[in-house]
Image (cartoon, rainbow, N blue to C red; front, side, top):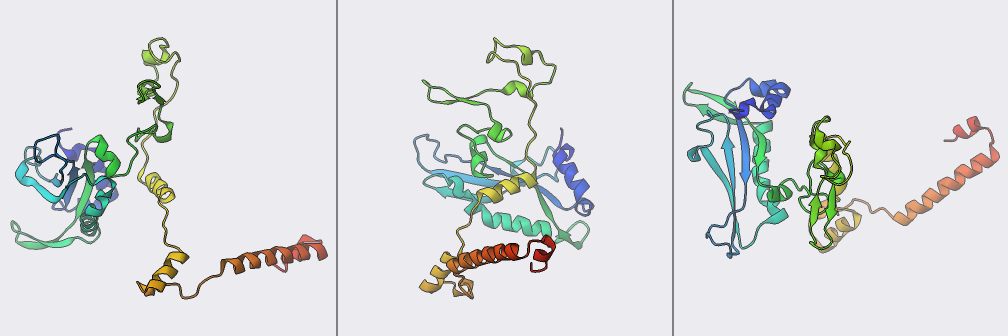
Length: 271
């Protein structure tokens, strides 16, 4: 690949959103994030995270030059942001979402005309530890492989007290000689197949299952009681005990219908 335009991500954008691809002035960006020590001392506790935007519309000999990169964020703190980095990235992501959906009116100095500039984020660039902070993937423990997930081959070393990750032979071709070798590996042949990376829809479904909101009836009533954001308070509180009693009454009623009207067609008339 000589340029990001040869990548599958670039071609996917051209295929799924031809209206975006039809305007060559639309920008295609990447985010690079990594923590550095600005004091050149490993003992320093100060942390600095530059968030750099890379423009891929330029030729390959220019797109990675320093003067064509944008320093969009500089997160400086006594300690690393960790999983709280999404709080710092929220304004940037809101701007990127607005530039993708609506765009912004810009001036083309070469053609001397106004046009709607839109932006798409192709990918992010980071090391493996930051992979756990930015997208929230597991990068340690028994399921540290982002591709394998819960099917990660891991073994806890009893004396070394570390996790050992094996099972790499399943990523080899089916006819590779390593798959049939026993003594050189774990004493077994490997017949497993390569796992496919999760799609965007599958990742969103996993996030919906993991993320649980604490926004419920009790939290809304607490806000009203302390006088904060009263407009979010429920218009009418629901008594859970009354709902349980109503549920029991419905069950008793259905049982009585079944008792006095034996034929199913008669029971369905009352439901």
